[in-house]
Image (cartoon, rainbow, N blue to C red):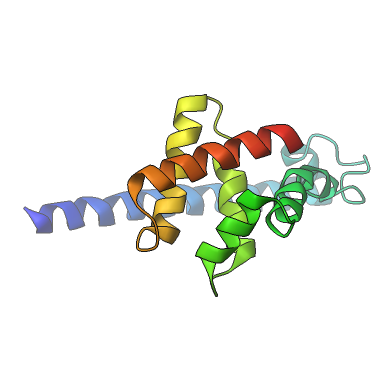
Length: 146
């Protein structure tokens, strides 16, 4: 049974590789046929400023992460509690994971994700009720600052 799953996985990988190879061959043929103008087939805004503005949206999008990092290093009692529980573990990694959990649209799912995140980092230091309280407090603070 396990061998069949592995074979199925390899078949999927081979299929994906075959598709990627066919796409690359088509692109190469278009290059040979149209010269450098082939790029117009693949890029919608070739002459625009996309190269100069590459990554600007990522810089703007990190304001949430920056706010979370600022909160985590603040003197707020929730942030202090999280840092105490975190110990030597990475504050940045926690901030990235909190930001990912914050992007969840439904409040119940967001609370569950935040609780699970805190449980994965602090399960040995705090009980389930404490984790839920900490997750609720953290979400309340994030709602205030974001």
